[in-house]
Image (cartoon, rainbow, N blue to C red):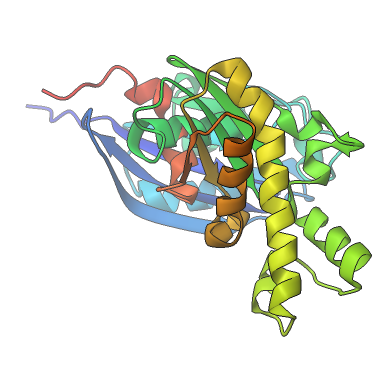
Length: 294
């Protein structure tokens, strides 16, 4: 009698220079992550080279399995239902513009394209945290990833959408001007005459602790100021924060809370419990959503 191989689900998080992923098992209560693999990928190259490198990392997790489903968290702009890249002005992934990455990967992996789904990376982060991490229990929530750039998503009920807050008007610019790595470099230079390449330099360099404290206080209050109108508008119960900047939470989050309390909209703010694995789990959400515990 022919033995039928069970369908196995894998989630991958793809960025401009990196891919990471793992096998995702969801029992309706918790997520089990195994067979984790990652790799650096130069996406300034040809279509064939990019697809080959992504496939190699995917195959490291998948092995020889053929009955697989693959969820991919990908930055925009993208035609997510059809897996077509609309990225053309960022340099990275330029060669893939207008092509169905879904079909290219399906052909490379030798699986049916319907077994591959694409999810916006910011949505995938909040979906993963809401399903199995720090976002559990929030009906309405905001997800932010703070790093080189600003990723964001809104969850209202069961619906999660890319919030695109990085371009939101804020003070005399846009949100990303104030809530990413670039702000730390600019503010430290303009206000205190010190040169840093990012937050890590600031926190672990030989700088006056008082100056470091002032910079982190300003960032924390800025984050609170930015969040407050969205918290009110959405009747938001919680905010989930990820990204490299989130790892410095003890330095800025108390000031965020203090600002929000001062304007009358205190809210729970939780740091990502899953970090990079949140997007992997969230990318598989279309496959996992109907699974409930026995």
